[in-house]
Image (cartoon, rainbow over the protein chains, first blue to last red):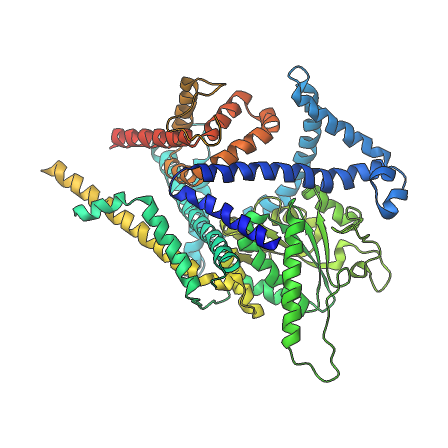
Length: 218
Length: 298
Length: 107
């Protein structure tokens, strides 16, 4: 069984690598297979067996879906409310009644937004703003002072750039937003470098699999 | 000059062959490059090193097989370190396949731990420690909810997890038992580490940090390193291992030659080849530009 | 069109005409060039091009939810663009052409 899975993994890996030469049916087979298997796995193994069954069905109908001690527990009837909200989502399938699903989305969005705004402000926004308020002149610490200048100018310039209500023109607005673009480009460069590193790591992972597990060369 | 300009039109497949060879050859030649642990990796290691034996930690596996080459070695290295220190990791997942990722990492880590125990010389009356599921570690598997789930853990840790991933009831597990008979709660967890591949990982824990009141660390993919550095700066994270190099640094600290350390030579040479091609591309661009400007002048 | 057929030119879409897709690509490219984000956009698109079919499948699955927030027509057009790599190629070419003309105009 293990040998079979290794061979399948190796063949599909080679199918994916074949795209580097040019787009071809083997690559298309691999990507269609990936989409199909992922959809099947997520909807059956994850959504049903790991989410719906233990969190809803086993609690609402313990005798039928519960196992062990769980099967003897009393049904948790309050779960009918999320069940109804879930069923409302299926109205998206009908064009005339699609609006019904908005109740569920409104509920989910309301809860998520309420939680996120408060928590994000406390844990992301305020700590980052606090860390960006720094002294610009530190006695005898030239590198630290320079670093603080870079931080403050960058924060202001990037905020200017993301203000799209007026065109980026003029001696002040145009220049500052241009500085903002430079900062963004540098950060994109860092992100691109990190992405290259990540992709090379993934390639190493695949080659380790091919050379070690499949061909047993290393 | 013409040769330089021609370099701009190198077929992309030539570059792919160079990158493939640069990754493959060091592996076949078994090259081993020096790994020096960085400040952020070391601070996570030191924190774990300082925790007293028996301390419970929470490890969240927030990745899927697409990020396995980067995060699996880090997870194994952290787990091996925790087992050696006598800590008790409680594994969970915010990503659907995270439970499976935790299972694989736990299997590798327990195997490495037992192997190093077998090689260790113990005093005559010493007994080799054997790891036992539900006593020394537990895999609670995936639970949907993200931030909402983590918020629930604050009020009732075992509420969302009546059973572990294999269906064993958590209520009677040794790992959740407190000596004073108190109910297990989040305050019994002294460190949270998330192996994060994207959203819904460590950021979900940081979101609830005010309620959790717990030290946090992270292991992330290379793509996320620039994003998560900000949390190190604000001291919201005690330490972090970033990408395959971060995992290699942690492997070095725990003295284990795993896939991350073995991957450092191909990674370095692969990067050098890419840097080389970037330089070639820029030279070709500048040569072309100077040729066209000369044409304009004449 | 089956999975074994690899189109050289953009195939005819059942929902949108070639002109509609083309004007959407033009609008998309114009917005990117206007924000002076051509370089990162080209890099990102080149990197994501091989995975466009996965993006298309994700759009199909998440469509009902995304359409509640964004314009459904635009989402459908985006899904159509992602369905074939040659559309992404055309988007890349459009961004590069627009960027070159802006540079020439500026210089």
